Image (tube, rainbow, N blue to C red):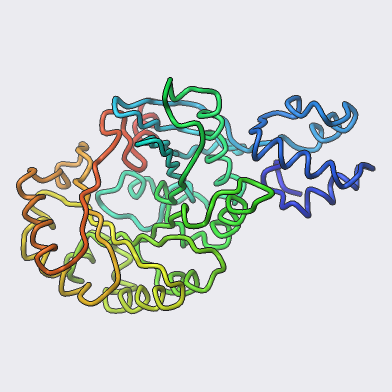
Length: 352
């Protein structure tokens, strides 16, 4: 049996409710309260008979995580550390901007990809998250917004979800797709699939599989280099799926889904920020319907991976654009609160 309510599909919830001797419509009431009214405990479902609430509470809790630590940045970004039912912790972030509210979710506890610049990669891999644990990260921040904790004039609801937190989403493919289904379903959270983006370090078989899913989600590939020699160092999974295979899969994804691919490129001072690296990326992406998001590396204690000077970033972007590669510079957010993937969890773990 699932450990908490949000792990249940609508049909499983209906089966649970009717198995307790209640009418099937009670399941719809529960879904509305949990996913739309954002109830967090069984006591927040007053339309249910007290006896039913007591039975459900005895069977399982509503949610599978609890907020343990929140930090709010000067730019409004909120980084949260959440405790799961087994005691493990994961991060998620809320990024309000221009009336929108994007939630960045984790898909694993730790990560096996082990990119050397990523704090999560240095933590190692512990386990995959369930679909319910992923969805709960969104619901927690949705409740945060509903309760007005974003401040006066802040967004009131979640508008976008990105799978760019801890872990490699496509290495937890089945649960990630179940989470997308729950977030997208009209009877549950009701978020448009085009407002959901899945990031990957480049797992080729799963990229091809994703292109055939019924959900029109976005795909973001963490590129960070235009040659195999450099990407092997920055994104170790490249040794398994080198750039030629990755680009072929991305082109197949576009043909299958009709959605262009976004490439994320984190710029590291003296590592991958030279104009020749930009030219290598331009050659790699020539003729592809795609978009490149540049972002300066988060300034961390890792001296080998620091952000470049602004002029270097501008020159890199100009070089890409001169080759007709659609490019934007994404502003780094939450730098004052350890908002980079895995940073908050690592710091709190060291602090005990």
